Image 1: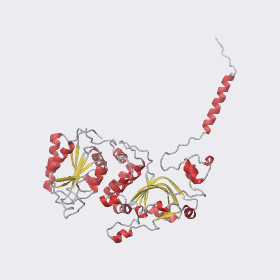
Image 2: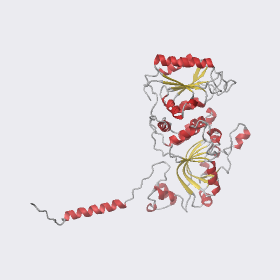
Image 3: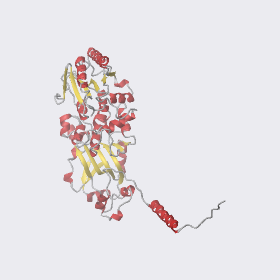
Image 4: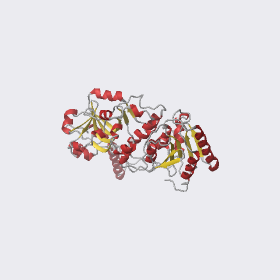
Length: 480
């Protein structure tokens, strides 16, 4: 039997053990802080410049950096990251007593405040109503850094991350179209301008907004009757928190200043001062003057569709069997087709199904669950119907060379709502007056003749079926 006797460690082994011990000690003491990569972060260089500190004094963690952003020497100035009428992105925006403050030593560089904010009163027509919406110092003030230090002191409450402030009355918010295809639409088009390279799958480097503040709407007056608004918001941003008019008032009555890290500030009345709104009548159109990816909306669409239970990239492209969805209003009681024309249209669509194998759906959206509505829209290639709220579902269609919206109007009538939204997403829109069709750039001016809201809207089913075939004639075109 061989006996193994213990021997003293060699010098080489001792050196290796000592090196290992020192290395472990160094690693355990090292600071591995993870910083969120986002445009709104205050870089070390900016911190040094604003606070006149040495490199040794730069905070080593995100929390320390955040706590020390306001110093006794200087109040951080407000940066206007981007702006078009009604849609503004700020860094370091201040609130006190319910008033918004922009801190700047260059006040001439700040846009006209009527294009940023309004009094948020109900929007009516007429000169008196327009004048009542114009902001005063009660709504927004521009002050110097010296005035800010005197007014705010050195201890404003610091709120990090991105905040969406909705400065609108509930007048339009509670409508599915005005929420999803205007307000939320414009919000994301504005915010996504900071990531102009969003790819087709919708992935983005932008951090999700952390909160939305409804400055003038309570918790019961941002939801729509069909419960679609909350689905869209909660599915797109599941971690988002919300505050309402009572919370806004709470913060105002506290009498303490607040500095928000990054703010996307939206105001319908302010957007109405823009040239694009005057041309289209759509407040979201102003945001399209900002840079952006052609795939900007895919970020939202993908999340909403995934939340409904489908793959976020689903959609009838040019190589898939087309899906035709006719959204009927025949049981709605307002804005309905002539009954005989409705029946003829349904027959023509079913002929397309039987002859070419297309999937055809004739639905009343109010009879479908929310999940069914989102899933059907996501798979639809051609969506059609009389002008109305049901067509809002077009925003969940997948843009492709064949993706089309066909909207029926009373002859002589036209509204930009769904036409503009369709084109903003890169799809094709056709209007139909009986047996006449039209599309951009040959669209008529907006008009609401007698009969526009009535129940005797004519449509030629054969013309609509032929238009579908023409659109599907692109079937050999490659998917975009």
